Image (cartoon, rainbow, N blue to C red; front, side, top):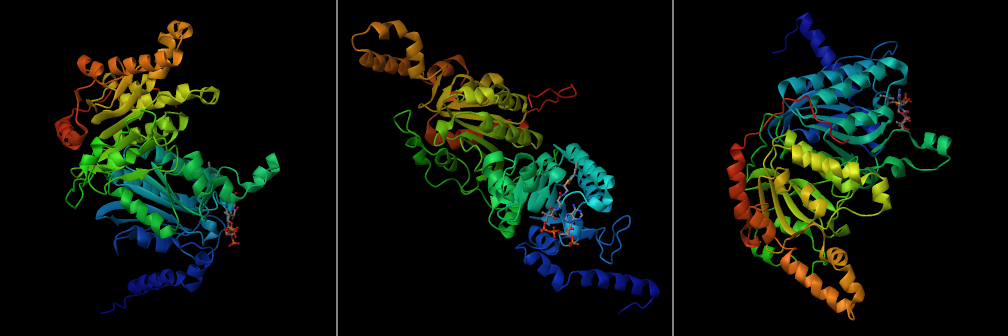
Length: 513
Ligand code: HXC
């Protein structure tokens, strides 16, 4: 029965006014831009009817007079895959989703709640940036959001989903979060837009080419996930969360489905080509090791010479780092080093054990790589693996040469279990290079230098570039039959379940950023 007391009448009137705000015109305003509304996005992201909005009735600060509630951002919490998550969704229909001071206060409130309660937070971003009318107060708002992003880093997973503009300082909150999703053709991110680029550099460029989803997904590496439409983008976020714990003292969730082993593990014995310079797809190895259909790749289109992503082994979540011989022979360069380093740190922060599949000929040589900092950037991966205290296992399937052998979680850098297949080639450098250095004089004076070179290469492979020397010295724990790799890994990760994860007394190290 309806309660007609004056208090309830006011309550009902407010609710009606809020509901009326989301009318036909509201939806059309966004739809005609090819975008969904903030409300529709929240509906797709969260489990059905689980979203609880907070601060729905706030109004903007200062001189802005409006009947519209919310100040352009929807904040609250709900469930995703049955687990609690906080979120904010910017509403472009109100002042272009610009970040006014109250709008910022609302975001900071959910950031604080997510952090203190230990749940992930997701930002759905569609905003013209700092609200011009609010002046420095909106800049202060951004600063407060960034500060909370940093405080939350490594404590709760933070995800940014770009579904419209993110311009100016607005790009830095996503950059501070763990994963960035972007939707093709409607999302773009840049520090300075096309107009400024034209003014300063006299360069004509569209928003799409300057900071569209594909640019950030493949060139800059800012976005790890790119989808064709908003629905798939939001469903992608739901999928990612299936692999993540809620916070840094939680463990990654088990799947509700039973683990299914790969169908054809026998493939593993024949996947490595006989010739060492013939490429193959590392994903074929990976998919024959982990639970069926469990691999979820991260940053697929950026630095594809290294593969990173999440998978399950006997239902338990793993972080995967694997060289990809199909792209640039799987070398380590600046981008692949940074891509993998950041991922290793994420896994370490959130208790996700790491599996490394190694086939790496070395670091990419050349003046370009040297000049853009392969030394300091390669060092990031070294630092990240070395520092990570989660269970870490490496399987060398083919090449493991030089510095790259060391970097890819080698035994002496803290690998917990290090396995190699009989096809592994572990040495300071590849046979060609080694023979040229070691046998320069003989080759220069030989009547048949080519034949001698082939003979020396064959001897080098036989005597040096194999897994057995490392095995005999204990740098490899075991040379294993590819066919039994899954079994060995399940057993090794089981042994590591009680691994004591040491905490350093120091404030923090000085990673080569
Ligand atoms: C106030 C804004 C706004 C802003 C957009 N609007 N951006 N209001 N402050 N920053 C308003 C518009 O006036 C308009 O209001 C409505 O939002 C929709 O904007 P449109 O321009 O009509 O939409 P569209 O054509 O789709 O263009 C979207 C846009 C453009 C590309 C985002 O609005 C734009 O360039 N905005 C400014 C972007 C920017 O430079 N932001 C500041 C970045 S600096 P009406 O009433 O007409 O509907 C920054 C510093 C942060 O963010 C530093 C932190 C460290």
